[in-house]
Image (tube, rainbow, N blue to C red; front, side, top):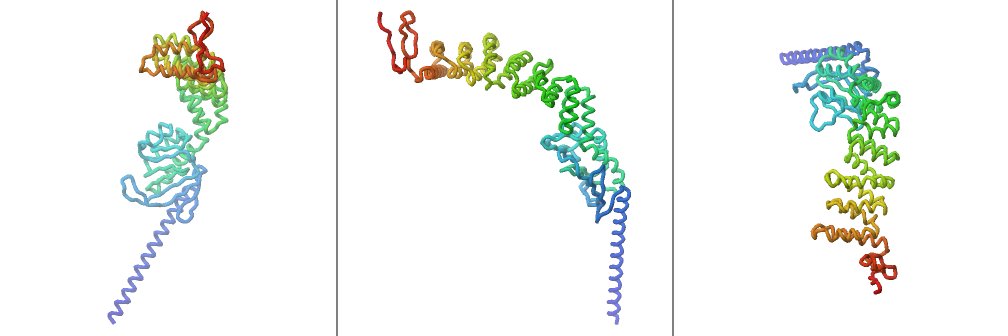
Length: 436
């Protein structure tokens, strides 16, 4: 009897505990549902399953409760807000930027955020959005923008409603329209000409038509702006003008020269402008872009006597230019290059002589043989020039007679001692002159 009573009492107690647990669970579920409805109602969204769905700044948004890991490493109950449909070429993560991570080019972002951008991406945040993003960092556990989705974690349910205006501004600032307006404003008003040019280039990536209109309407105030407007408008006269701009850097002038020549620009204009603005360094940069352009040979030949004269007092700076000239002559030159190459051969510099000998293999005639023989006699036994000069002589003779080594002594008594190529039937033989 007693045992039966105990069993009944235990069963009743278990039933009561189960009922209380079920009631508590239902109460918690109702509270959870009420919290979801409260959040949805305050934000003008709808509850679906265990989350709130709607839109923030016309972008799909989902808000749901979650267990968060705080900045201190502890676990907390909180909320996660996810907003999709954002540009995929920008990534943000609250926290310090790690070494080796790429920059967006936006100093405000790069200084305070872990940022990454895909190739060609632009730091798409307007000034108001940057300001709001900074506020967002202070009241959230984590902010991550990745693959077109912005995820914000916060501990407080009440914080979600306070965050909504901030999130709206940030999301709008990540859209292409907002940043285009800011870029256009900076193109118009930024005090630095180089910044105006850079902003115009970024604007072209987002709104090319707007950038083209601004490029046509603006009078360039810097070499950078002139180059960018010329490139956008495909205006080669503007690009050519960059080479001769008073304050242009050598790097930008070289870039303009390259673009000018790739679009069929006049090599003479390129050489003149680059030399006028940057002297030997500019001339060298232009020459290295013209190594396969036959029409560049003549203006280079005109410069050789002057450069050789300068080499007597400034060999270090003139050597690269003469070497570049000789390489161009070897590739696309002809017999007309021989006098210039012989002038280079007369300079006491082994590096210049080596490339001149190499070029003479292609450009030299039999008139170059005596100076080459003289060089062989002057060269030291260990210099290597003797063998190179001999190779050049053999190449010249082979091109002239069709076979290497065919020599004859001339018949004219007054020119005795000179060498001439043998006739074909006498190739490889020495023909002695008749005695008078």
